[in-house]
Length: 387
Image (cartoon, rainbow, N blue to C red; front, side):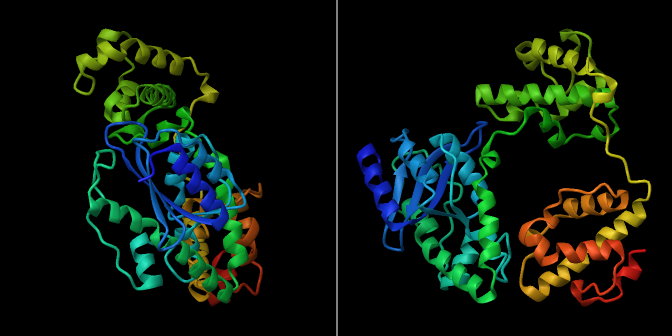
């Protein structure tokens, strides 16, 4: 276990010389807003695997320098969560990231494949299970825990080479690397906008809230998000979703009116003034600036049918070419493009940019416009279906 600055410096220098490094994290995330980092695994090859003890060694600036070094490939599996944690722990934005999970979707594999399945697919080795619920911040770690952590990066440099070889054979490396470049965007690892978190609230009856009540819910949720960050507690530990929705529905006029089945007296005493301030902010939002409920498109049946046809077309093309359709476009992105085409407003759809445009985007536009010779999925009469 690496637990000193000098040992970490030596490891970073070794990784820079190797030019590729696999990285993973182990953390505890049960009662806090932010994950508590316990171990960072670093793999240079099957034989050269290291564990950084982030309980003992809390200064990770040197690791941050490695993450930000564009001359070194950083290999992750399902990168976003690990990189978000490391961004906060090191203060550095990553550069030159390769996500083995996402890359798998370009070479005939599932773009959401687990690391265990990918290791088996590429090496024939079956990784051991059993330590996913371990407390990675408790010391000492057992030999079994250490072995489990090391295996998470042991095979990743080899998988990186294996994926590139398969990508080269399929003529997909350029597209693969274009997709990886998106992971260099530091905005991916920023904390979410507190005022957008109301869209994640799950509670009964929330769909029936008026625009005024939704404005209040937005301010309540933003307050809760900031409070959870400041106190490093889970959102629910501050105030549950049901309570937020209930307050927005009832619009209490005083702190004393807050308490009911969803808001305890303790929560009222702790947060009553802040909650009332959030309600006041929400009520003061002008009518034209309040968040509105999503409404069905006036021609919803036709829009839904066109979305299904485009989805089927993309799926057909992907099946023929060995690309996972989930990395091409989501249903929401397809729907946005279809609606934009209907209104002739245009859109900055991912389907109309980069490798996606080359792969399928131009044919999707031809399909939506009713042009002939559309080859998506091998169906030649689709323009007729889209009228």
